Amino acid sequence: MEGMETTPPGAGLGATIRAWRGRLPPSAVGLPVRPARRATGLRREELAELAGVSVDYVVRLEQGRATTPSAQVLASLARALQLSAAERDHLYRLARLVPPADGTVRDHIPPGVHRVLTRLGDVAVAVFAADWQLIWWNHGWAALLGDPSSSPPHLRNFARDRFPLDGGPARLALWPVTESDRDGTDAAVVSDLRRATGRFPRDARLAELIRVLNAGNPRFAELWATGAVAAHREDHKTVRHPSVGPVTVDCDVLTDGDSELKIVIMTAAPGSEDETKLRLAAVAGQPAGH
Image (spheres, rainbow, N blue to C red):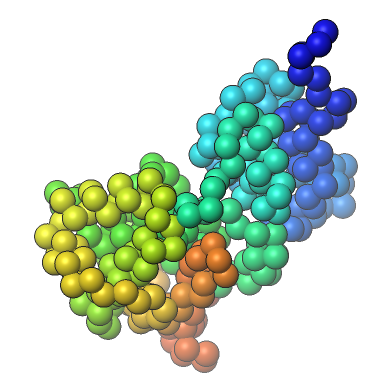
């Protein structure tokens, strides 16, 4: 019938997600490849865990029974499937949503960055968006600082942790962390957020974060009023780990091109007692009861 939309076979949302899942080997996301494994790509259960959604929802998406995923779910799927920018935009359009526009913060991790991250082993690594929203972390990070998945996704923000509202609990580190220069780190995070407002002037999430912190945290408001613009690049921290004791690490922040992703890597001095503790923490994992 004239004017009716038609979708070629295998080109719809569910079929496309299945195809992308089938092409991504487990090794690309850091999963072991066992000899008895039949599937060459990711299983639905693996995709669901990586994207932070239920297995049932992945099934309904692929079967065409769920057709209106939210932008947040699509962003998570794009990261888990390691889509290119063009593929991510296509995913949004298949779900009849407008792809993230230029001038807004991006939560997408490019495939090349994913490959590097998964090859770092147990080094403690996390990826933050330009507004310091946590979007990815590995086993080493969770073992050192605690697993952030226990916190609601929208609260997994480093700036919110630095400048809490009404004395709220920390969300990204489950045990005490001290820095060699706390005032310097506070100033660096605020000036980095101001820099992000120039790079992403149309981002509603970034604007709301700054509005909330300005209104609810006097220290943030004081630093914001200085107008400083800079990037947060390095720090030195001591983590009071409940299993291995205090661990002092170097915290380095790398930035990924135009998207301004912040790749935060925590390492200890080679051959030091702290390096040994860091390895022990990675082996031990998260202590029971946390």
